Length: 191
Ligand SMILES: O=C(CO)[C@@H](O)[C@H](O)[C@H](O)[C@H](O)COP(=O)(O)O
Image (tube, rainbow, N blue to C red; front, side, top):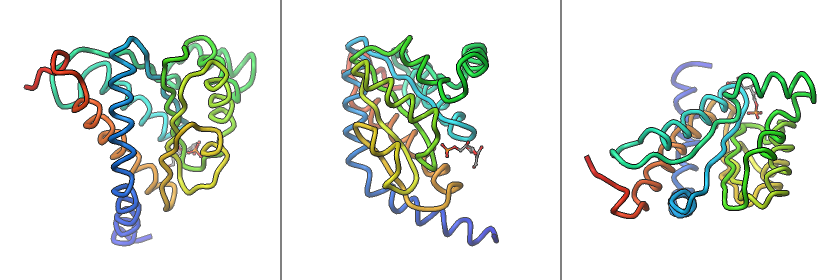
């Protein structure tokens, strides 16, 4: 594929993401409320989506745009010893589900990123999260897909997996924009 074709494909996926702005704004408000009430965000994905899950949690624990309070967020894919032990002892399908069963509480939010919406470990993770009453948000490629069906809410995007992945990074930043904008003024020190 030529570079021009790649960039045109990405532009199409980003156009579809623009239509999801109201959902991301709503997610940001919910996230601000849950995290300030003591909840936590757990994120997971495979491959490139694992990097995006880590990117999201880093923005919340560190900061995104503004200097502000830190919030509790864990990227389950980067727990190397847990991931390798669970995969070794229980199978790779369980690497997120077991960590979610260990860490998730009813007021938490579990963000699962996938391009296909078909990764078995994410499907098991969604089931585990729902079992404890945590809210499941999925970012996926084209719907319908099994992960979208299991999630409480889904941001699905059209396009090739590479473009979905690229646009999901934009979605992560947009969610952080909405999150920081929704924080109470006492926790938001604009710098
Ligand atoms: O980064 C890429 C492709 O862009 C790959 O590493 C990709 O993330 C991996 O193949 C994943 O296993 C795909 O999982 P998923 O997005 O289908 O859930």
